[in-house]
Image (cartoon, rainbow, N blue to C red; front, side, top):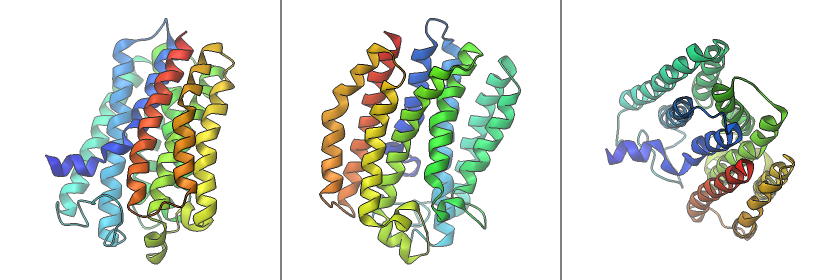
Length: 281
């Protein structure tokens, strides 16, 4: 069980929880508890599926054979490629089943969006032409774990889409991207050696650190654009934001960035909680 928990990469799961929490608070007082739970299941199982799929695809390609970050269960031999692939498929199936229930109770268009999400999840590092190897991972994360996750979670509870929920999805996208940005910064040198051209590899070390910092700052600015007085609560997270920016700009690299990744996930949960409370107020 510990092996599969390791493969699920718990530090990345805030990216799945945060948009659902924010969307649900914005849906008040019309929120739907059952659909909110189903939306959370969709988001979490999709995130876990992505993590297993990446572990499998990078493992069989050999790009994880010399890693700085947390142990990958395929490359390390802790689990067979077939078992990891099966775990990814099961996770995607759980997401699909919960999503189908949401589609049947709201709109069948969600089936197409769900299918596209799973295809994007697999294509990040899977297949013959993975877009994650071309520096496009951040765009996908911003769209699917920011905009789609937030707007979709709001829609299944209210059956409508508003400008405000679209704006509220932007800080969620920025924070989700920040997790990937620090992860890719940590692995930048190793990825470059195996021709994995992530955005961090393309930008280089210094610009990647600037990019991470801008993502955190933009989350605060996007939140304020909702023009609800209560969202000023997100400013309470600024000390942590500036602390993380200071650490990144100090030049921390390699294994030292593992803790920064964990702290970024905690910031995302704190920010989402404060943002959700502010929206509810």
